[in-house]
Image (cartoon, rainbow, N blue to C red; front, side, top):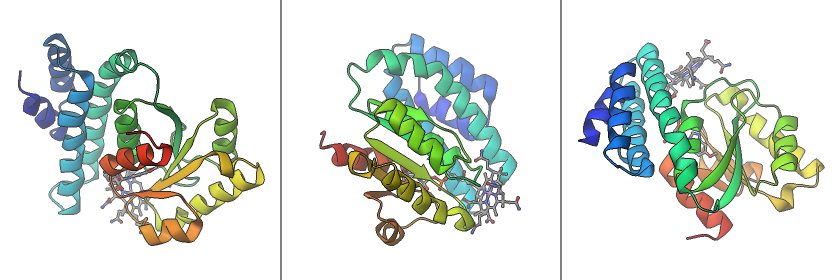
Length: 211
Ligand code: B1M
């Protein structure tokens, strides 16, 4: 079986095709991580790029994301099984006021694929919820995403809430999302900026000092 067919099915938002091809890939013995990194993630990167070039519009992005999520739901139990000991625990969410979650979901997928235990708080997450999740899980990484310039400041609010809860020294904070830059990450006192989901994996590992 060719993983390109699955990649194309995600790009085309073909939910049924994604379900069948993911099941076929699993039965053919593909490692779930390979399916994730060689089909699902690159497919969403293509969709993101097509969007940026005005080749597709919001409905197509949403349909592709739904198809990708379906495949991921089939891979998830296997990804969890294959990971021996998690390399670290990460909580992730999109900031308060922001409902965009496609990029954040990709980061969560990639982190899971790389062996992190990920607690996905979803979108529109308040600083208090981030703090509570760190307390509940003992996470070493907090990942914050935003797509709106109007909600970017919410990232600083999360960092300040972690400081107030005396948790800032215990966690590394990574920020990302289309309007975020390294300069902005520095300005708000984040530990890392992830410009893509792939980079988010490398940097999360580097933050924890794992290879
Ligand atoms: Co909206 N939206 N949207 N939207 N939307 C944008 C972001 C926008 C740029 C469109 C535009 O005007 N050209 C614009 C923001 C403008 C601005 O702030 N300057 C915008 C707007 C204005 C809005 C609304 C306000 C529209 C309205 O209602 N008037 C509204 C806001 C609602 C809200 O959040 N409160 C809104 C709503 C929506 C939908 C619900 C329709 C939908 C979101 C669905 C969903 O996410 N479930 C939507 C979408 C799909 C988009 C666009 C089209 C696509 C975003 C996306 O998913 N990209 C977007 C236009 C664009 O991007 N050009 C747009 C693909 C995704 C893979 O990329 O998220 O950047 P991205 O993630 C990348 C990296 O950034 C990185 O890794 C990912 C993969 O490599 N990354 C991280 C992301 N998070 C990271 C975290 C990390 C590390 C890396 O560490 C923790």
